[in-house]
Length: 79
Image (tube, rainbow, N blue to C red; front, side, top):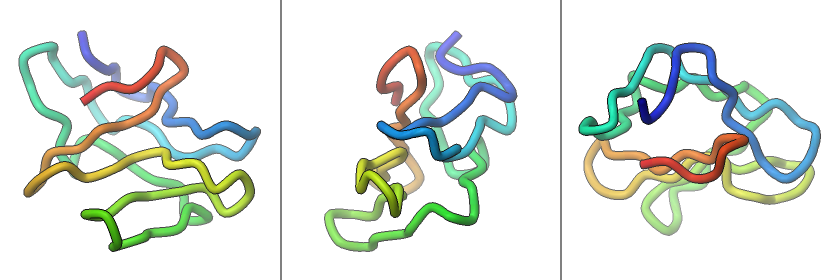
């Protein structure tokens, strides 16, 4: 499984970045309805759109094309 419901989305610091709203199977793409980003994260429309941490400035989630996302978890990046 690519991601599980409730799995954390992280950045490089201790700030919570978000979590997955539902399970994402290996063959599926991650869509915006699959993730929930914490309100303290900052939305940056440059470079296609990304959510980043205001403290460490690291990207926690980045949009690739359309509604396809790359998201950082404790296990690493998933897309």
